[in-house]
Image (cartoon, rainbow, N blue to C red; front, side, top):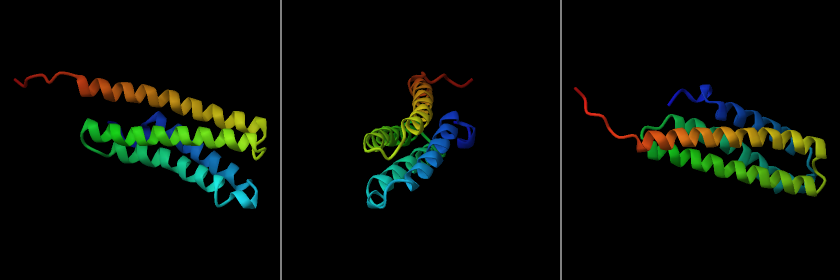
Length: 127
């Protein structure tokens, strides 16, 4: 696996985590310990797990960290929907965040397919 900084999914996830942290700062005070904190933690988890997974040896371990990161992405998308419905995010801000989240999800699927193909590739005998 390439260095994590070269992975498109890590680049998108890092951008999303920063955007979510900035947005969460503007949530009401009563939400800072709840939804804002949960959004930040889930958003940070995405690039952190991608980076850790990229550093692991073995397809199964890499896949486990990528699956955790993808789960955190779904958590972020859900928190963003809740924040929008609670009027903590404007529709425009929600659309910007969701656009980056969707792009991150698409790149996850591509990377996961590649990892799965690597896992199922037959071993070739060495000469």
